[in-house]
Amino acid sequence: MIEVRNLTRKYGDYTAVDSISFDIEDGRIYGFLGPNGAGKSTTMNIITGCLAATSGTVSVNGFDIFEEPIKAKKCIGYLPEIPPLYPDMTPLEYLKFVGSAKGMKKAQLNEAIPVVMEKTGISDVADKLIKNLSKGYKQRVGIAQAILGNPQVVILDEPTVGLDPKQIVEIRNLIRELGENHTVILSSHILPEVSEVCDEIIIISNGEIVASDTAENLINKFNPSTITEIIIKGDVEKAAEAVAELDEVKEVEIDDSATDGTAKLVVTSDCDIREALAEIFMHNGILAISMNLSKASLEDIFLEVTSENLHMLTGAAPVKKDAPADSGEVDEIQKDNVNELYEETSEEGDE
Image (tube, rainbow, N blue to C red; front, side, top):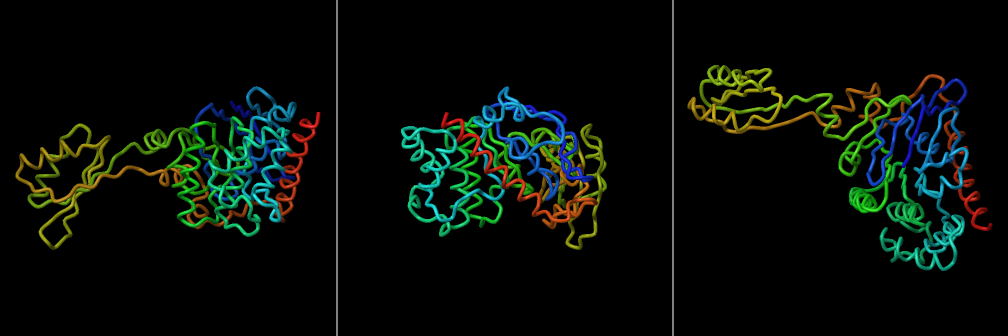
């Protein structure tokens, strides 16, 4: 569906995206994960044709985004981080405008708009001014314009930024629904958002792809060990020796600092061995009060493969050497290119 090869974007001496390559397959939800400033939005803007690349290629459904932009863009629905909404329009008026810009005929619009409004849950605010809508509804209007025309690929850049917890859950559910009929690329720096809705995760840091796979495979690849913490009553040394004899066990640690007659065993193993542990304790007359199993999380993997740990935890944008002094300049470039996207598709529709 989408092939990205050696994609690079520079702003003077500053490299925002550094020769990245990846493939997006049809019918899956992809999470583009990285700290603020990692290059996610830049990559999304290049893929959608809203920003030029310094070098490299992007092919969308066989069409080169730079050589055949109109054909390529017809396959894409795009929600930028800041939705390109017109506040003095109603959602209905805005969707008619966007549909016309995409080259859709009046009959097509009359059929398609009620469908996307129902799917995104904005039918009840169709005639209210966009400027009077909540942040959550504005995001829904932005998603509605992205899926108008039924594009094969839907690209959502930070779709839940600024939403309250209830709105975040609603947008996540909507993204899952979109994944049933579209290929979805979701860009985010929020770990739960990516892990909960995405089939595959691409982690980017400092403009480079540092990992790409399913969440489960990433966890198994970077940290396959399972940690089991057991609170026991009985001979802790005897228990530790018996547990250590299991082939799957890598390490056993004893914590006997508790003053209530219990002790804790921390067992590192290749897999879940709780059933085998229960048998060992039963045969040795040891009471297991509790067993807690844990594996590496996506957060653990993220912190391991990126060098932007502090920025991920704080949510602050990293300060990079030679970065443009005024990020607003970059935003304006991207805003202009979003307008060009609609202008180009509108011209083809007139033809």
